[in-house]
Image (cartoon, rainbow, N blue to C red; front, side, top):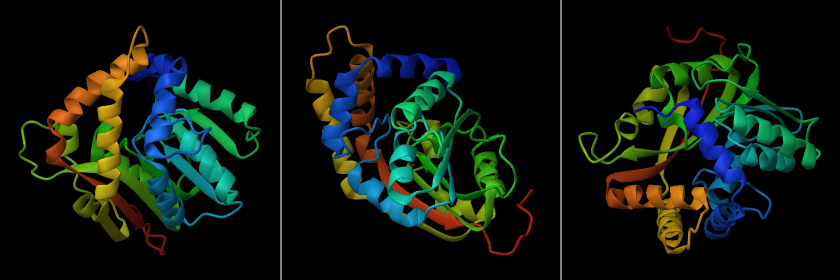
Length: 259
């Protein structure tokens, strides 16, 4: 079942009020001390993502399903690029805008409510697109990949972190995760130079995070309780997924995106 924007609004509202959850994620995943993340990409993975994007000052990164903007802020600071963050949660976008003011990054960031399949951005308006741990929520998935292709300039890069099923027929897994097969789906969306690589070390860090989350005293903290519920679900099928980093680029020719 798809999760609605309203569900994510509530989830983000709980997370904003939970320094315990944020600190746990930063510590276990090795993230910068002021980075607020609700994904499972760790510090080592972030380094790889920054290198794969290859951005520099003045370039435009579109961070799809950006949440509270944490990775976009960090990439903007490292590369000098401009970041456009898109998320369907109005609560997350409001927090990202307030965070941009706090970090004095309003001149290089722009956060908007939008969908993975309908960003509202112009064709060929981005130098790079990033989707961290969220592509599975796109409905339909092929349309989201075509949207990434549409907003990229010729030669622009897309970087995706996600999970793929080791067995697409594994009924224990969510249909959202079982649908992911980026090695086939990115070329169908019009991308070239596609690479999808396993990242088992990222997966081990995730396992540690879930195990430590279960050991925390949740008390009346709804964000921690939510993490613990998710930890139980994830660990029950942990052996069914592989962690991947996918990179690709739009063709250098200005050919139209696939229909």
